[in-house]
Each structure stands twice: as structure tokens, then as C-alpha cells.
Length: 223
Length: 223
DNA sequence: CCTCATTTCAAACACATGTTTAAAACAGGA
DNA sequence: TCCTGTTTTAAACATGTGTTTGAAATGAGG
Figure 1: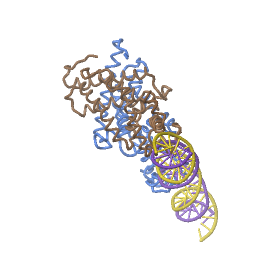
Figure 2: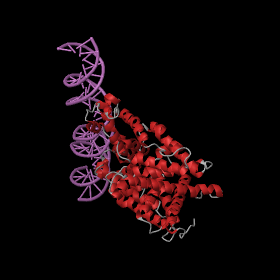
Figure 3: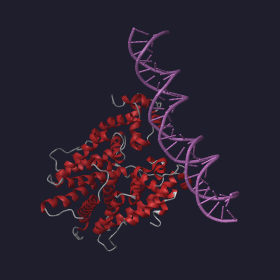
Figure 4: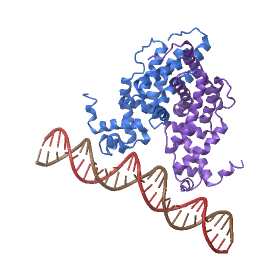
């Protein structure tokens, strides 16, 4: 309160707040500075005064809301280094889904994360270094724990891709999901269900497909 | 030849050809009629003369290239109604991937298909009726064949989503894939490998997760 | 060769949108 | 109160882009 809310009273912060929501909702290109400033209740020229240009504002939004997202949904909440890979995978998928499917400011960075993958902007390099590559690395290490660290890299990449793909789908393809369920957002229970499905689906697939193929039964099968 | 190539000598058809490529590459919004007309080598005003407006051109492109795509990569090539669901799934995934990852005019509709899901335009309704819903229905019937027709609909939707998601990923997330493999297109061999992975991954996942669940009867979705 | 409908073109128009500008409002200190 | 630097504002500006327009080119029929 003392810092977060109070800091959103001056123009720069109000713009940041409005921009976070609108960029997340409509993407960098579709979002107009006029709409952002209208929502912030300030004059259009203030984004140039405070952030240089529209792109500067976008970068400021990214760095500002990254913290919020990660501190709310840490990528491995509730697990430690010694946890079995099944637990780690479940934690990863859950955290990832809540970060991109949640509502409010804690989800804005996640939504921008997905947007940047689907339609990169000039901030793509920054996003890769700060968020995309770390996420993929973490997931790939979890995958390695499931299929065995001696599995060839190409196979691990395919598995990692399959898991990320399933998560991204529920955000990037929400147009067709909206058609089916009639809403454009998920309840917490639905997100949990989706997380469970993706975890279980992927875990069993990896075990049967790749783990078994190598050592044929030497690996653990709990869960 | 008599019809296809010859028809691309007049202005309208040259525009259609150029628009197919540019819309597929850049999407409806980013694509400019000036760029399309420049590539077609005609005056800007001709898209309005022949197609009414930019949107009319887009619709014409969709209906025109849909045939091309489907006749080149039929959704169940090489299988018939009596084939086992595994074969059907493999055929579906292969066909789907080639339609969206291939090169040249046969892939343009597939790429527009993906774009329309990621960022719908006014043509979304048409796309849903003519392509998206048929694809999902076909895949869901295949899924039903794998997990059993008495599986509850929600579970089948989750599995269908997991499969579609993996396919869409390789088109919609090509920005990060390009970062990894250094190219922005796939060879035929790579597409075949991806198709094999997705098929096997999904098949085993569905068998272990849900087919088994039915026979043992007790497994359920936990939180 | 002339006529007229169709097609094509260069130019202009309309509008949205990012940015700049010059003046006004404001805030803190002497 | 006055001064000065900062912040905010309304208006104008620059540019990209879809569309329209009026004239020129084209081509089939007589």
C-alpha cells in the first residue's frame, strides 16, 4: 500500500498501470497511446515526456510487471531441489498457467510473454534473455529428470516443446476456446484442472515413450 | 495448367496470388494493400475495384486457397474409415503439420488458419464454420476412438486440445524456434519427425491416462 | 475507324496514430 | 510575492494506410 498504490497516483505510474493492462490485452501494435492515456486520465503527450516513446513505455511495462508476476507465482512454488521431477513438473505447469491465464496485474507480464512469442516486437531479445530462455531451461531440466539425463537433446527439446505448447495453447488460442465454453477467462478450478491434465498427459507420455525405450523399467514409477 | 496458371495473368488473380502470400506471412492487419499491389505489379486501387475492399480480398483469398490446401494434403490421406485410430491420428497430425508448416501456396491457407486462431479477424466466423470446427470434430472423433467412445466429453476435449496445441506450436511459436535452430522453416524430414513425436507422445499419453482409467475405473482427476 | 463499356492508373482524399511544440499550470525556494 | 524548473495540456504536425476519383488506356462490336 505504502509504495504500490501510492506510486500510482502520479502520471507516470498511472500510465504504466493503464499500459500494462492494454498492452497485455491488445498487444503492442494494436494498443494506441491515446487509449492508454485515456484510461490513465492524462494527456497523450505524457508518454513521450515520461518514457520517450511508445516503445520505451512498453519496455518500462515489461520490467515493471515482471517482478509482480514472479513474486506472485514463483516458477517452482512448493517444491525444492530434491523433489521428484513429477512434483517439479506439476509446479512448473501450474505456475506457468496461472501466470498467463490469471486475471489482474499479476498476469499482465505472462500475457505479454505469450504475445511476444506469438508476434515478436523489438523487445523480443530482452524477453528471450529475461524470461523465455530461463523458462525453457528450467522446464528442460525437469524433462531431463523425467526421461533421464542421458537422453539425446533433440528428444528432450521435442518433449519440452510439447509441454510448453499445451500451456501456451490456452492463452494463444482463446478465440476458439471462447467459442466453446462461452467465456473468455478461466476459473481457478478450471486452471487447476487444465494443469492436472497437462501434467499427467505429459508425464505418462514421456515415461512410456522415452524413459521405457532406454532402460526398460529401471526408472521409478510413483505418482 | 489450363486454368490455374493462365488465370494468374489478369490483375485480379495476380492480386489474389500476392495477397495469399503476404496475408499468410504478415497477417491481415500488418499486410498493406500497397505492398500486395506492389508485389502483384498493379495499381493500388485495383483491390477496391476487383474485391470491394481489403476485407473482401482477404475473404477471396481464404476461399480460393482453401481448395489448394485440402487437395494437396487431405486430412486423412492413406487411411480409411476402418483403419485403427492410431493410423488415423498419425494421418491427421501429418496432414495438419504439412498444411501449416509447408512452403508455397499450398500452405497459405493453413497459415491463415493458424493466424485466425491466434488473432481473429472479421473472417473468424467463416473460418470456424469452414475449417476450424471440421478439424476439431475430426480430431475429436479420432480421440474418441483411442480413449473409448464412452469417455466423458470434457476429457476428450482436453486431449483434443493437447494434440492441436502441439501442432499449432510449431507455427505460432516459430519466433523462439527460429532462435534455437537458426532457420524459420522446417525440412520435410523435420516435419515428419515432429509428426512422429506428436503422434507417439499423444497416443501413449491418452492410452495410459484415460484408456486405462476406464478399465480400472477408479482413477480420477485430482487437484 | 468509331463507340462504348471495362479496366487500369496517378493523384488526391480521409482518417488513425505516434510525436512534437509552445504555452499554461504547478511546486518549491529565496 | 516572485522566480525558476518541472509537469501538464491543447493543438498542431508527420506519416502510414485504406479508399475514392477522374482521366487515360484497353479492347470488343459495329
